[in-house]
Amino acid sequence: MQDKTKAVHSGYDKDSQATMAVPIYQTTAYEFRDAKHAANLFELKELGNIYTRLMNPTTDVFEKRFASLENGAAAIATSSGMAAIFNTIANVAEAGDNIICASKLYGGTVTLTGHTIKRFGIEARYFDVHKPQELEELIDEKTKLILFESITNPSIDVPDFDAIIMIADKHGILTAVDNTVATPIHCKPLDLGCDIVMHSTSKYTTGQGLAIGGIVVERQNLVEKIKGNSRYYHFNEPDASYHGLVYTDVPLPIFSLRMRLALLRDLGATPSPFNSWLFIQGLEHLPLRMKQHSTSALEIANFLEKHPRVKKVNYPGLQSNVNYPYAQKYIHGGCSGLLSFEVGSFKEAVKIVDKTALFSLVVNIGDSKSIITHPASTTHQQLTAKELDAAGVPSGLIRLSVGLEDSIDLIADLTQALEA
Ligand code: PLP
Image (cartoon, rainbow, N blue to C red; front, side):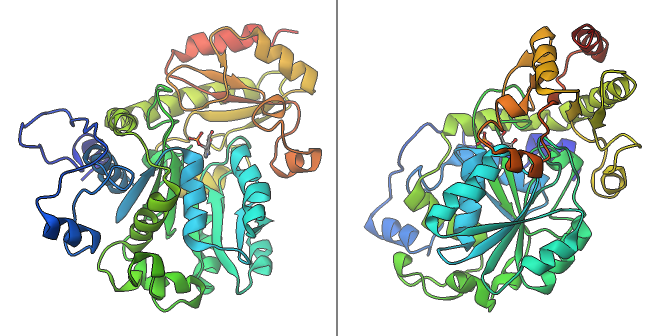
């Protein structure tokens, strides 16, 4: 089935009322038929609803639809993109372990990996996604995850997927890719050989800046990489917190199963059914919107590249961009709506940001309304100068999230804002 069809149909068998729209199951809990039924659900002898912190029928449609768009086996929706990333790390790593991350990442992921998980005893090491030999040198027996973004925010790089996956597979290490910017419409990391895909669904999935959410999708047959793999002993040994369940013995997608049974249960980063419903609405037109976001972004990137005040434009759809060959190989049908460009200084960047009228000054991306951000004074403000450099965020960098307005009007707005 093609993406446009999956986006409107996958995961929903019309309920007893035959509603065309997916119903919102706004409930905390579900009545068991009897004590036996309740016990069976808890023992996984039967699958069904227990409590909305663990599962919900509206969220279930969203998870199934997203998994289908990513060509994955199963998905777990979370309360935010950051929760999706943290739960992914927590599903594989514990105190004493390390994960290896791309040096250029979304600012929240930089602080999560560089600071917060450190306090849980998990070390993050960083590598350049175009220098896979750096990655191999960082791997040891305690490495549990290789984490990167398919199109980085805000530096807009596309990684060397094949080289990274080859090294990860050689060492039996799971790869997790944040596919928020590319979306499953432009990139399918699981088809490229990655193991896990993570998203902030607060962005292109909702498409109109309506709700915070996240999702984690696992690939088909992931059990093959985990079963008997000593790095992932906690999937292979009895889970004392779940009556001795051995995840690799269960004939279900096990990464998601453990995330649901152990992490949603204990950490509770679950989306509200209403937000899941909003994400379902967004998914229905995601393929159409991404096409338009990408077309307009390329037009704007071409305009900026010729502008005398602009030092550099980062957009992998530009032939002049170092990421162009990687984008040609791994990103399809457009390069999404996110681009960044560099002007002379922090001061100049702030002036331009203040002068735009159609672009709203907002720390978000993936909205139908165009957005302008100055990362050094906002999303990346907490980073040290060294961290800013490593994240590919010079102080004169401006990020644009190109919306669904007419690109003629957007270019006119940028033209007046760039006037000295
Ligand atoms: N990943 C990327 C690439 C992002 O851009 C963001 C937020 O901007 C996140 C993750 C975090 O998502 P959320 O704000 O939904 O927690």
